[in-house]
Length: 244
Ligand code: PTJ
Image (cartoon, rainbow, N blue to C red; front, side, top):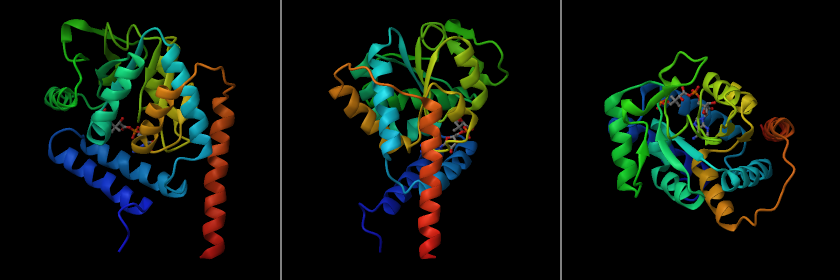
């Protein structure tokens, strides 16, 4: 039996959260598939927050603290996995929270908003069609954003994002921060700051970092950091192959 603090047991718990999130109308069917892809990369990364992820977390904390209009974009997977942490982070850095779904669904949006409110969120954007604006260069429902949220933001945290919108947000002049376990995904490669970590672990680290941040400047190169994440995966594969 795997002890409950073991990374594997933690991963199984995360999987269970996703499944019950699906059953309670938070997560899209496709969200389960996306999670499966994430699990694979998490396994290859050793199911831990790497040094490389910590570097990106530090850069992300500074970007959020220094932002004038930071916004956190919430989808079904994020709501199911870390609603409490999203609300906590938004309070610490003064960010707005916007529900923004790839697979647009009014009922799911309402369910997500309800959960965020239950976790202490006061204002939730992305629900009122009268405030909606469109980001150009996109076809998916994610092009519809809130005029007071993502549309006006200078820094956007978009965990588990799709590549097209990351690109569209970058083209609209926003600094994009993402969590993505796949360092090769288009989102990972297009964002300004990519945290290659499981959002469940990484978000907690980001909150800690935002609380402790001293506003110091750091040098951060996303492409270099992503290469390091890929090297980490290769090292883990080589280590496992040796013991196979
Ligand atoms: O709720 P919706 O309608 O907005 O849909 C959300 C999903 C996630 C289904 C949608 O955004 C989507 O299809 O995303 P993608 O394009 O599948 O990308 C998801 C990325 O997140 C993949 O690269 C996964 O490896 C990665 N990922 C999955 N789970 C995690 C993760 N990254 C960090 N932490 C995770 N727990």
